[in-house]
Length: 203
Image (cartoon, rainbow, N blue to C red; front, side, top):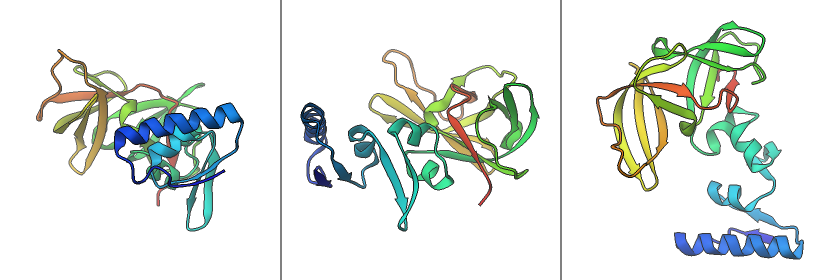
């Protein structure tokens, strides 16, 4: 079955109901379907495998979780979902981890099995939800100042300045009864998952 942007004219609630229904029918009937879409959330929710293409070239063909958590190219990392990109240098390592130096003097520890290009100057890619907000510094964190706070339903999205010319986006669950961060607040960012990030050569 070929589905060519079948939900594009539907409102958000109806679109979700139809995605669930079609996903259920395809599974029950054992039908193979190709879905063409520009909606990334739609592609992630409807697919068993995704082909990410640019100018006729397939950059990655994998499961939704692999596409999102382990992008193979810089294009996939920045095109699918939201991604923070920062210049980085490897300044230390041990048997299981690598230590990255990042803008603003912060350092983060990532898993050693994250693929590493040969370049000395690198680009570190991390999703906004892979940051954990702390109020006290730790050995491996990014100090920053909250500048923008955006309430987006179940989550809060923050823009945090970690260096004079570097800002990152941070997404945190919104918990009723707990006040969100405020502009001007000093925070420290740690990685939730040192493996769910990527490193690419500079452009």
